[in-house]
Image (cartoon, one colour):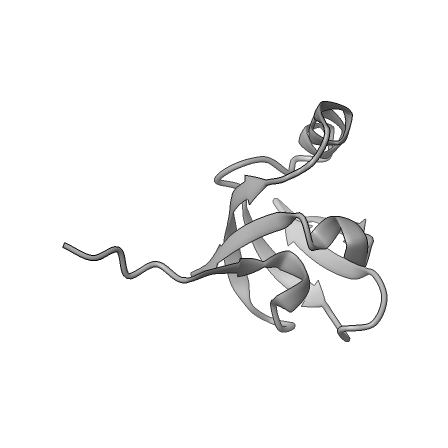
Length: 80
């Protein structure tokens, strides 16, 4: 049976889209910082703002979180 999931990176998600974090590719210190912000594997989020140029804004559990585009390129997500 084939896996029909389609993964992409957080910086590629359009505004007003929901997704789930699948994997984060970075140093342990960054993973700890993201975890303290509520961002880890299986976290569900809404993309509030992404104009495909600068930082993105996510909404996780009624909290808005701003992430730089470089970091977003290291976060693999699945659309919901």
